[in-house]
Length: 112
Length: 112
Image (cartoon, rainbow over all chains, first blue to last red; front, side, top):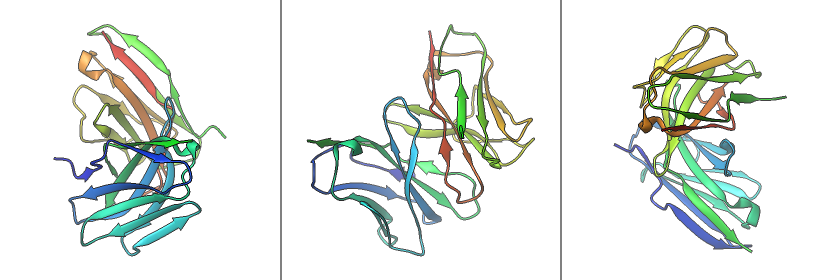
């Protein structure tokens, strides 16, 4: 049973436009969320996080929004750049656990 | 500053052979993790450790064993490799609960 879902396997966006990547979760005990970016032949690298006490966190071109009632988070990239082309994973963790549950990933392609 | 280093980077095994994957981190992190990544499946946790001398099972532990004899090293063993263990393996470390996980570059394993 997939507790963290990324329902869009891929997304193509024109350079300069907004990229919106979505993530849904089913476990209401999750209270901390991360986004990772992964390039081919490399390990995932941390991008941005959000705690359940917030509904938004911003870092430069990257903003993560959390809607707890809908159990939904989204990553916005504005403006999108060709170097943002990668696979993006969301991950969730619950109170008192040491583990993250990862989604299946969304492959973003930013077209020049 | 190496971060998380995985060896080897590539390996081809025959069914029934054994091998050990090594993960080393130089960040003095308490927590370490082994994941496997398969197409369409995201990152799935195999085993993890919350400190030297401790190990615990993740989502997909069958067919694998681990050891954490030293804080900086986390070993993943395959006693009798099977084709279903063909995957990309990632090691990660984290300073603690809710900490960001830092990943190695991965080991690509093929079992024929």
